[in-house]
Image: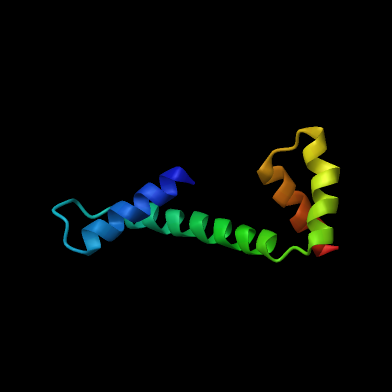
Length: 80
């Protein structure tokens, strides 16, 4: 994700007239894809009810599950 953000910041600076090389359109596209995916995941977490958050937290964080795995569990639970 850090790489995607860096790529998009550099592209935006170039787009606004910075004296830099234009980035690779393919890399910019991949960075946009990564940022969209992250924004969608954030939106899903943001819309959790307090009860859903507490349940998800208790089921996953207490076992040392990382944040990304926690969000993946939420996505899977929402698809059921």
